[in-house]
Amino acid sequence: MRGVVLSVNVSALKGTRKKPVDSAELIENFGLKGDVHAGKWHRQVSLLAVESVRKLQEQVNAEFMPGDFAENILTEGICLHDLPLGTKITAGSAVLEVTQIGKECHNDCEIKQRAGVCIMPKEGIFARVIRGGQVKKGDMLTVNE
Image (cartoon, rainbow, N blue to C red; front, side, top):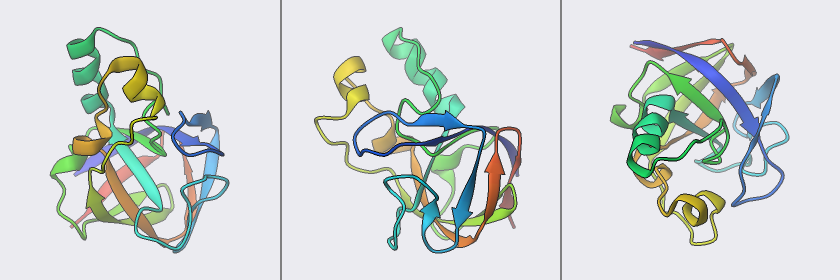
């Protein structure tokens, strides 16, 4: 199964939109360098499929930009929330392992305030970095069999 990285995003504060960057370093067992959510825990990197974003855009008649859902990596071509826990994904030169599907959305989330709903609780996924490397827009995203 293959897809593509549409955007790589980072933020310095929790609960805010992330800003796109040209490329970023994924650090083994830590996460995306320069991102507030990086650390030695199971949700080091967040991923969201643009297909999920488009579905919500139609439902709420709103426009969303990369990083608006605080996702580190926006993808296209893979139904991320259908991947089982433990799935390995190669993104650029890094390898990630899916550790969680969805999360509880907190009330002060910018997107939930703006749109009234957030898709991360059901369709966002989280991973830990099991092999570090660079990731950038346009990189292939491969589900390792």
